[in-house]
Length: 235
Image (cartoon, rainbow, N blue to C red; front, side):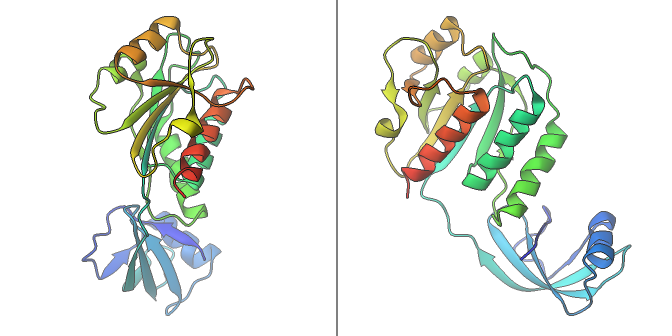
């Protein structure tokens, strides 16, 4: 099964028109013909089963024949993660977190951050590709980058809020502190960890300090461990 992504399909749509790049891929690379079945999602939890009506490298048209809603998760996860110095490591995190199951991501710029400029459009493409590859029908929301202090000042009252750090201060083990079937937010810092000031500010905002284990993890590894921990605790 190959999944296509079209953001502008509404639940009431009866047909869809593929853009030139997708049309070329369908007609030239995949060699699809009229009557073939194509599977498309709008990234909002709906799978559209379609029948190809016109297979033209310039313009492919398909008729929607069935709509299936994705089974909803019993939790939602928002991850605020500092972009890594090596960009490919953060891109790896985006890909794997999308495959595991994540709802929203905010790149946070911290006091110890070595990367302070990100490529939002490229990140969006990576997330879309991971969603299609893993046959998920819900596209995670990628928020613009924001400083960690500004992020903490935003309202986060509807989630269970956590911050993972390496400071030698009292922390709970993440897997033991999760209440199943809730909405969660967890913050993962940069390679140099959160600063002492940032950790104290998060505590003042009601964030629970958590440990992900005894090993010292890279930023992207810590983020994936956290993502997987939430998924396992909600099975």
